[in-house]
Length: 539
Image (tube, rainbow, N blue to C red; front, side, top):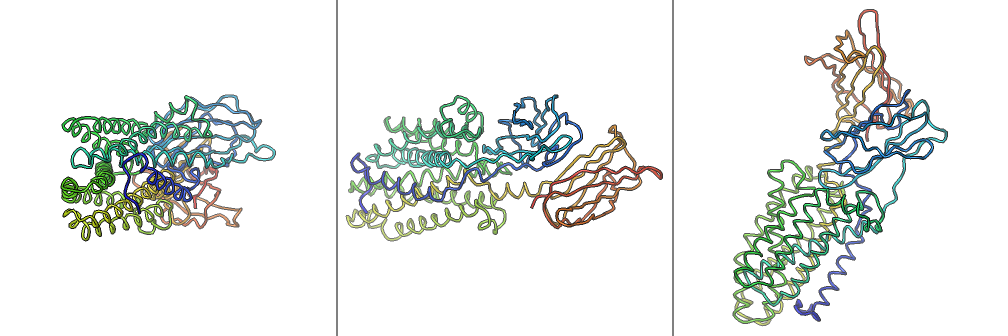
């Protein structure tokens, strides 16, 4: 392998290596619309429900807090109405319904953005009076591979700018390797270009627009309004400070380089999967330390290779300074990475059963190679290179070039996390209850099945009078049936708790799907209310 280049002509091999690494990783790119980061766990009306009269409002409850982007109601005749009157209460979205709805099948189409800055959309299909002829199938979105590839490429390029550009500027200012300044400056400029473009692309994705929608002002406004907008802005500021440090004398260069390195950590801690996870007193500082450690290590590669190419006492001095400083970056980096992995993955099996876990395994494999190569360099090549052994310096430069390729592959792999929900989020969504509200003239009930997927669940039933008053029922029985699956009614008596909620523990629901629900409420010795509806049980 040739020396790591520092001039324009020598930069061509590096650019080719970067292009090849990103092309290879593009083959691993999943269809970005196949993953959801905030899951819909309950809807009123429920998906597939047939209601007697038009509802006055809709309710969507998600597995985590969201912000609405686009809410539409598609009517039986195909026309649609923008729903712009809603109230957001943490993870629940209450939407005012139009007043002029007729009979037939309607589709409540929603698109929201989750707390970690990722968009997700879906539809709830319900019918008023009776289903329309031909039904009302849920609209399906075709994956936009070009948009997904553009999002991934800009995210990867932003990592290159932050870690190799800003990190390289820090290394040059505090340790050495100034001959690498032109390449480091070019990478910082590339990251500065990627920062706003990645925000615009997020807005395009959030609004479900094609890639050509990048020219629409609403896409940029939407992107800036998300939590990732703060990351993009802070990243741009960090890169501007890195560029300033590369153009100033020593004292000013060090000040702006230090501020730039801090800015890298703050920018990446401002949004994303890990930063949105709980407990945030742990996750946000961990993301900061992880990002700063990566920037120092990865940013050192180009300046260090440039110093080794020059040789002499300045080269040896730069290498000695790097050898003394690198443990202080690697140890916090590794500790923070382990902590974040534990929070996000939760269980070892998620490493191979989820897309997020498989991306993490790929990243860990690349990291293992990187650590092994770095250890080999430190044990066998550093000491002779510090003595200005030309052969050792040449071998160390080639090894650093190999490290650089691994680092670029790690950046590309980490950028795939933009499309994969962490197991933590999947587990939270799976643990959410399935709930329905059933209202009749003489009584009403709220039923909650926790968790809301097939298996053993706990049922909680709150009963009230038809006008929302307290109801001291004598007996409550839950009846579940799934005729489509050949399952006849399952009857279980509920036990009233001290909080006036009727409960059934260890209720077995054998399969997922749409279950018929009936709640028999014995109001007194002479009156029985039977409330019927349907509930969707997740797999």
